[in-house]
Image (cartoon, rainbow, N blue to C red; front, side, top):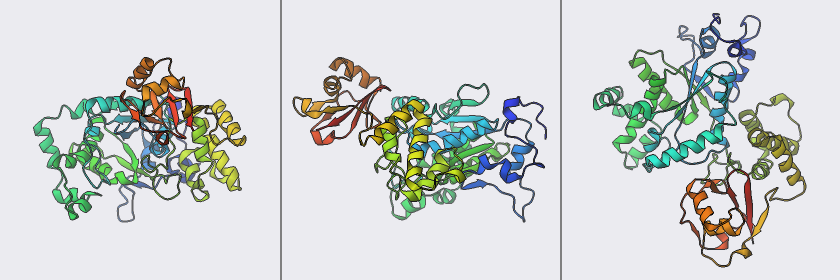
Length: 419
């Protein structure tokens, strides 16, 4: 194996394949992974495996993960491919994090029953910055050569009509209709707009632009990743490997984690909120949560389900907020307070409803004045239950809209609104 050109930190996980079994050598690679493709088969023994590529490379591989900033916040389900990207960084490879500031203006149609609302450039730019802030605790932003943050408007906004026609000529309508969601929409006669067909082609072209060796994504991204392989082949590049990760089931134990379903744990939520939610994860999900959200050895977890829940809550809060915050969240939970370490504010202190958010920030003491409250809202520094609010004219009609929710300004100011 040629590793003469790699700095020492880049080869820390690359070891002699004759002394360590392939399975042990690449445990970090396969942990929590549903599928790696393509794979060699008896009928196609010439196909190179990702493991072989990793063992024989004489350079750091380029590992691509694309994130479309279609919203302002990330939950633990979104963190799974980001954590796998960090694993590749720790193995000495280069993480290429693509912020889909151009593709987000279309929105990935995967799994959608109708066309997605197109975002403005301002929406996307604001969301992109919050995404980077939230993944910073996961990725290595500091070691030279370990991370590239790219915006796909860099190359997609420069495509002329000739290049777009070339991309379109690589796929048929039949192939597009085979994509998850499109076939169902077509059958139900729900509209499919032509710009939606461009999405997988643009995501695939991202792989060409950054010369990706591996692309990470959820199991719902296999079609898009495969398109990237086809386009790389079309443009004379070596096709990337696809590495698929599971979609995380939410805290309700039934449906996938989603903010709209209320079964999520947000990365930007108060540590006490995270802890409270995670210590209530159903027993049947604990093994998956440990495997996908932590690096703890799976064969050394506590046998008692309650102990597992508490360990999970501790470990996740520690990762994102630090050990001190984890200790405070744990102590608050032990004291029996469902609200944890979040101070309370009684809504009886609000003179009357409807009430403007800026006034609420002032009366709760989170801001010194209504004017400061407006500025904080405009700057994107105000959240309600982890959701960023940027409309200075936001109004709440009654106490029932606010009861039990956590109002936050910046990273360190919180109050829970109670009756």
